[in-house]
Length: 46
Image (cartoon, rainbow, N blue to C red):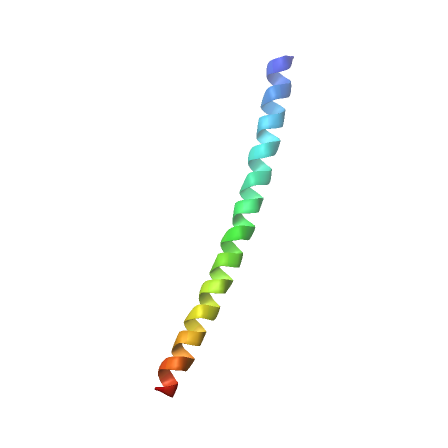
């Protein structure tokens, strides 16, 4: 019974972690897009 409870808790933690990392990845991607856009605008001005 303890093993089943431990597996259930571990699964919940892992699934929550995946969603968190997905969100972080999306945020980093958006930040990278903004940096690229800013670099392109600066290059166009030069």
